[in-house]
Every structure is written in structure tokens, then in C-alpha cells.
Length: 400
Ligand code: PMP
Image (cartoon, protein in one colour):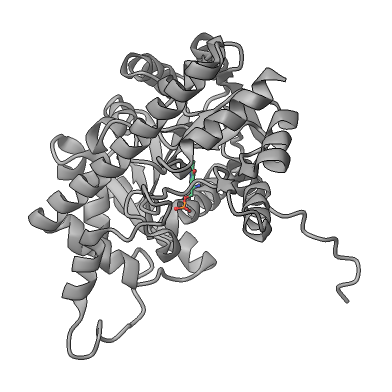
């Protein structure tokens, strides 16, 4: 029956991660997958998460586990809205946002993409060149044709803003434009505030649907600053669909916590959109899981726990920035190249190093250092114990 089925080629990022774990060398360094490791190279369990989990324990553990509603836990959804859109401003007061609790950022992308495909069957999708590999996979999986718009400038390690604007300004109405809110994956190159302000009217005039992916809120400049794109586009009257993830900023990868929000014209429209979103969930997995969402809702809805969380999140952000500076300084002491500035100019977990696939292969084979073959390096895998070794190896492959 299944003999004709070809082998799954695997996800390039996850396969590389498996190769890393199989590698027996002692000094190996994993800078491939987008996961934050702490200064000791460990996956952190945030203290605030431990506190919240302890507080949820009653006589019968966490208590009974009924099905959640299709849309998820109400207090979690409200907390998502406040975090993503901010508490001041008319959007939430006027109940113009429909929101789901989703299975991570990926679940939000999938439900959002299925929802749009059903309701905008004529639309096509544009993602940045390059983008996170799974964007194309998810949107094509829903049946969309996926194109790219210019984004990364390989020559400068920065943004091709003029070309990006020109491409978006020429899109047919109701095109879906996938944008990264902050900490662009894979390049670490973001739009400035001024550039978002320039892009907003173009999207509105072209009647585009901005699908904003915010997987790294808090890892760029801070929780509010990183949401600047979302809030600017929403306030400018752009039709916005927003996927947010708590995998990284709560270090709760396996709990699969995220949110999908659609900004509507008024409360009545938001209610109808909410119903259709719920229907899309019903057709996918019926309703989301409980534990992680309870923990996150408890933290976000309690002033003291929330303060603890923002402090731990700032520590993660600052550690990444310190590692950027450290790698840059060490590399600069070994080689001189205009390519090094990008290590400190790009933001978030990733740097697009500009290393070729051949150089990346040499890093892996000769030095046990794992990057993506695109040259993407996860800064959050660096620590004081390995940054010197990584700098030495990068300098070596750049020099020969
Ligand atoms: N979007 C982007 C840009 C990402 O980098 C990631 C995670 N690698 C996701 C979405 C998915 O997030 P999650 O792990 O919460 O599904």
C-alpha cells in the first residue's frame, strides 16, 4: 500500500541538529538551531516558570484537565493581546482583535495560513528573501503560491529597503505579505522604526494583508520596542494577522505556546473572524493543550511574576548582545574584513555570517562547529567557554 511513498528529505535545521548530537567530538559547538542556551550552554528553565508551576500545584496536582475551548484559555488570550498590541490605544478597548491560543508560533502560522486560504482563495503569499525555511512549507502546505520579495543585501549584510518597498508597492490587492516583526530569521536584519513607518502606508494603499511573525519578542530591544512593527501597522489601518511565539521568550519550546491575532475593523467583524478562526482550529486539532498556557497566563497576569519574567528575559537578551560583541572583538583581533560589522549590527538570535556553504562545511568537519549552510549562526549558542574557539575557527576558514 505505502510502497510508492518517497522518503521524507527531512527538515534541514532539525537534521543538522541530529547530526550534531551524533557527533562524538568533545569540543563540538551547536550554533545551528534557534534555541537560547545560557552561559553554561544549558537550556534554561526560567525561575519565574518554576514559581508559577509550583503555585499551580494543588492537592490533586494541577487539577482536572477538561478540553479547553477551541480558542484556548481566555485569560491567556487576553494576555497575548496586551503583550502584542500594548494596553493603551483603541484596538483592544474597542474589541477589534480576534485571538487564539496556538501550538507555538508554528501553530499560529498554520492556522492563520489555513484561515486565509479558505477566505482569500485568490490571494498569493510573499515572503522575504531569505526567510525561515518553514514559512514557505507552511503556506504552500495550505495551498498558496509563495513568492519572495527582496530583503537581505548580501553585499552589505544589511537590508535592501528600496527594492523591498518597490516590490511590495507593485503587489496585487489582497496579497499576503509575511513580515518578521523583529530579530529576522535567518539574517538578523530588521527594518528601523522609520522604515516601518514608511512601509505602513504602502501596505494599506495596496490593500495588502500583513502576516507578521513575531517569534522573538523581547530578544531585539525589549518587549514593547520589538512590537513596534505590529503596533505601527495595526494603527495605520493595515489588515494584520499576527503570529506570536512564547517558545524562546519563556524558554518553553516543548510546551507549544503561541498566539494568533487578527486585527479587524470593528468588534462585530472581530467576532465573526474569531468564529472562523475557531472553526479552523476545530478542523486541525480541535483545541489546544493546557499546561504551558496556564503557566504563561499566570505569569503575564500577575504584576510581580511578570516583573520577574521581564528581568529574566532582559538577562537573556543582554547575554546575546554580549556574545555578539565578544565574537566580533575576537574576530577583529584575528582578521580584518568589512564582513565583521554585521556581527554587531544584526539583532536577535541570528547572524548571517556571509560564510559560504563550503566554509560552513569546513567549520563542521575540521572544527566541530555547526552552523546552517546558508551561513546562519545562532549567537545564543555561544558562551565564554566556546566563543574564542568559534572565533579562531571562523578566522581560519575565512583566511584560507
Ligand atoms: N517563526 C520564526 C521566524 C521562527 O524562527 C520560529 C522558530 N524557529 C517560529 C516561527 C516557530 O516558533 P515555535 O517554535 O513557537 O513554533
